[in-house]
Amino acid sequence: MDIAAFSSLLTSPGQAVLAEAAGADLSENGLITTASRLRERHPADLVAAALTQVRLRERARAKFGGDAARMYFTPAGLEQSTRASVAAYRARRFASFATTSFITTGPTLELGCGIGGDLIARARAGVPGVGVELDPLTAAVARANIEAFGLGELASVREGDATRQDPGGYGTVFADPGRRTARGRVFDPRSYEPPLDTVLELAGRAGGACVKVAPGIPHEAVPDGAEAEWISVGGEVKEAALWLGGLAGDVRRRATLITEEKPITEEKLTVETLTPEPGLGDPAVREWGRYLYEPDGAVIRAHLVAEVAARVNGGLADPQIAYVTSDELVPTPFASAYEIEDVLGFSLKRLKAELRRREVGVLTVKKRGSAVDVDRLRRDLGFARKAPRGAKEMTLVLTRVGAAPIALLTRPADHSALNQSQ
Image 1 (cartoon, rainbow, N blue to C red):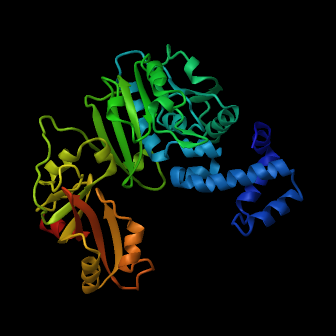
Image 2 (cartoon, rainbow, N blue to C red):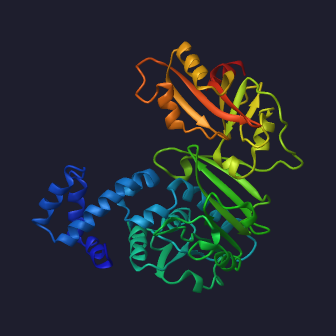
Image 3 (cartoon, helix red, strand yellow):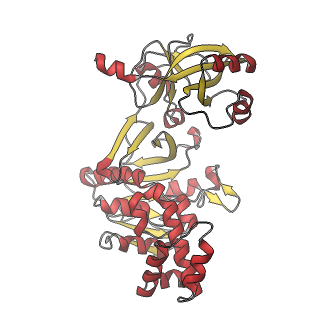
């Protein structure tokens, strides 16, 4: 899709084709028939643009919920765009800075605004902004999204090179450097587009800034004075961000867990944040207790496993493996709790016998510090096919203590009894 085709999609005839395409059969079997039928009455390039947008909108529902139905996307723009719940949470931080800062603040300059997801979230939070986007088509898509939400008075987009922007005159900066090339994802911050060092230098000129980065960013790449935040949504790590200047908190690292409610808005987000506890050392190393705690991925990325261990009065069975064990069941949003039924040395024959004896029909397998091929193990244990209805469920956790491979037979902890006793 080029700019001409996209522009035609924004006209009245284009909107009519888009609406018709949205109600048509776009399944694998029905797509060709639908496209042929639409091309009988509309230009081929307009039909192609409409079908592309409808299919992208369907994919975008996972990130944007119901808002996806009125937004516009490019494949690359959707891939890199911020999830709506994360953008809404982050916009709240920008809005707070704008209202509490003692320095004069202006609009937010966004370097590499993509399709405008973060720009829109901040505008909805009352934070005006200007987005800069190098790709003309992506810039046009971002403008269309701003108009779709009626935010033209608070947000705008211009074409330009992010590295040539002057943050002077802006209150804050947000940057989202490209982390994907034709060869796939980019993990080295020096290979971002623009490189992270370049982006940080530009962002550092404003009173406050936030730079979106990959969750795997090395801790040594976090600049002095910055706060690194890892964000998890529904138990899955989605991204990380570096907060600079006045937007940085008083901690160096943070794990933030977001629980979404539909529709996705800032008011319907449950946010839990974990930060380092001063003076807390490494977790104790101990024998397996009654419970196993699996810290959220954001907690692990932020190196805050010790904080979780302290909250549940637990320790680590192996100092190098991020599984916490405790004799107590303590509710915490930062880790999933499992009751340990048995601790076994890894043996395929013994595992198979134990699972059969316990009449397990639904098996979830987790691992950390284990080289076992999970798919092959499931086949070897007889769980390659769907379990029979009414079968008992169990979670098998594969790990190690030192060099010894360990298999834990567990079930998700029952918090209901704990809640009733409190």
